[in-house]
Image 1 (cartoon, rainbow, N blue to C red):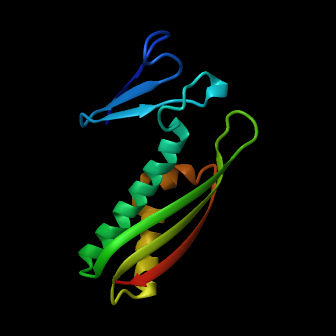
Image 2: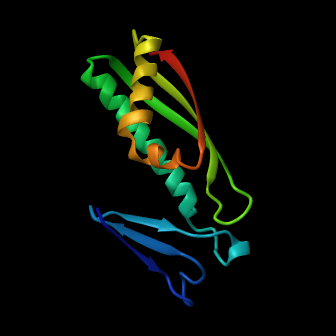
Length: 144
């Protein structure tokens, strides 16, 4: 896996702290900082993308696990709320994940197992972040 991150430079339309990442799969992601740090608030912060990537990683796993088990899953939302350390490096210290999984006839224990498997085995992002952050997980099932 690889990625190239380029700074927009000191002048012109992208002045400040705007960066564009080009992923190894050829996709572009913009990043920026808050105005108090020299940014222009034009895009997500890098740490926000790290949190979003973790949510995407674990939601992907949960849906895949449920589909492979032939469960009628129709939606999966994950809300992540994180707290960071007060001093540098400002790592995540606590992450709360709330899963809302929609489907027909989904059993709570089956969905919880899928979430647990993602968290403990498959989601590389959450396994890495767990090294610095305490994680709490909630699961809600909505009949669809």
